[in-house]
Amino acid sequence: MSQLKIKSPNTSNYFDAFRKLYYHLYSNSNASRAERIIGDLSKLLFIALCRGNKLQSAQAIDEYLDGKESANTLLLPILKASYTDVFGHDDKFHLDDTSLRYGLSVIANLDLHEAKSHLLGDAFQALIGPNLRGDKGQFFTPKSIVRCMIAVLSPKAGAKVVDPACGTAGFLIETASYWESKGRKRGKLIGIDKDNDLFVFASALAELAAPNSSVLNANSLDIKALLKLDEFLSPFDADYVLTNPPFGAKIPIKEKEILSQFDLGHNWEFSKKTNSWKKTTRISLSRDPQILFIELCVRLLKPNGMLGIVLPEGVFGNSGSGFVMDYLRSNGEIIGLIDCPRTSFQPGTDTKTNILFFKKTVKPNNNSVKIAVALTCGHDRRGRTTKNDGTPFPDDFAAIATDWSAKKHEYWFESEISNKYYLVPRYYDRKTNLLLERDAERLNAKIMSLQEMIERGWVSVQKGHEVGSEAYGSGDIPFIRTSDISNFEVSIDPTKSVSEDVFHSVRSEQNLNPGTILMVVDGRYRIGRCAILHEFNYKCIAQSHLRIINVSKEAPISSFELLYLLSLSSVQRDIRSLVFIQSTLGSLGNRIKEIKIPVPKKQNAEFSAMVSAFTDALKERAKWLNVLSRFEEGSVEL
Image (cartoon, rainbow, N blue to C red; front, side):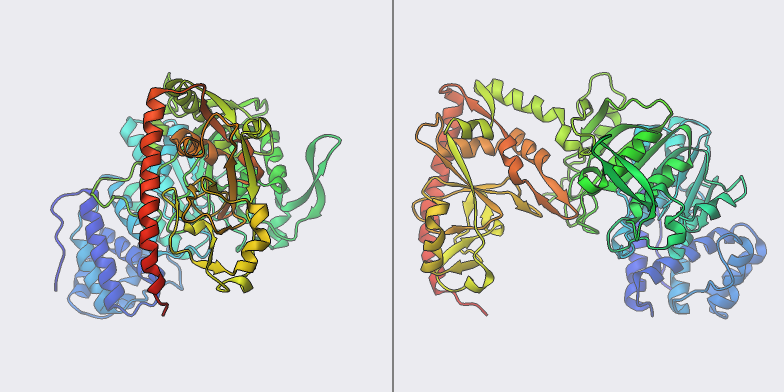
């Protein structure tokens, strides 16, 4: 039988072994779901651990590898006898025995007991994350985010750390590794997960990497059941809670028995008199799970205990979620917020998330909050960790973790919260202002908002139009959509086109001319990206997800200069801070007028040279694109 050999215990070797094994089983076994493969691999990990513990177990395992009997007759009794808290009466292997024997032979060659605490966890979770579907709202937390959250809270020696939605036990394993790296005495680690496959998997990894941990297969949101657990297994009175709970409107909690146990499971009403939310006696018809998990985490903490939790951005910015913030403030203080990049949980989910750090205290101080903004997370939206040239994608989370306790901060800044119900971190990002000030000093410029420029009559901003799908294909006039905006230009082959009649119906309102700037303000991607129209392509219609920006003759800058300034990384970061994301869709909306731009006070040699090169390149490219567009006329669609 073919076997994989492991030369030395490092993450890449373990991951390579697990990956080859997984794809061998996926291609050759009888499994129809990735979860089945992962579940049986977890059982095989336990079997491999049993092999070195008892002679009887080792003999049975050797007999199985020699082709005797089946996994369910030889191996399953070993699991149930050795791990009574993990495996019950109904548990069984699902893969065929040929595949299981191959898998066990591979795992048996790994130095499971010799590996450092986090290596197997890293390798196995790197494999499992992309292969489970996340249809229950379970999107596994990238390692860099887990390590950052742990470093920020810095669990003390001997502390009790709980994850009530532990998934693959990432927070537990990394906390154990953190204690080890700091030379701190290990404390108690408790994880809970409702999903049985994840519970078995988490138990296997915890057994390998954090033997002082306990993983429970239970519904974390059933507080009454949690209260019945004995003291050793109880998740209450935690020093720290670290978690990434399941989230999403597609998996609402509707059970009245569960909802009634939570303050946040009730309806809340806003009082204009007190400018706050008040809980009513009425139980809500449903709640998204992350809302209940917020309260659960607070209740699990002991006084002065600390929480780190990943949440969808809607919790931080939806007007209807204000009651959640009032609940948190009534039980302690928000001590930190991290704005996560859109790619953080991709390709698993496109939902935008942020991280909240909270301290449970009776004397909260909510005047200011430490804010950090991560723009990169170590992978792209497809999950790739390296670029085409082989260099790794940058990752801000390691630096953010280190910067938390630094004397001079590069990422964390103390920020005043101007709207207590709008806590989207990047909106309060002070670093953006520092970067704008640096650009203003470099360009001898004054920072002005787009609103100020409008009031001075320098620019005008108008909304695009929707023409209706029935108009698509009715003519040859390009209907410019967000997908047609790229690299400061409008595509020479737009996806949709309309008739002359449709064009003339909105022509006067849109006022498109050579030099008009189109900015993306709505959508999933490209918000803040701009294109400029030229004499060759200004006859078109701009979609409503675009804003039409025209520079007047009275303005001290030209349209090309404004386009250049809008493309500055500091301005793009400012635009990002103004975007509100609802689930997966973002919108800049009327906040476009809040964009801050460093407008040069007078001609600056450096600025003039850069803009001149920028303008020449765009004009020259536009000329040649116009030539190339003629070759598009003969193309046909399939």
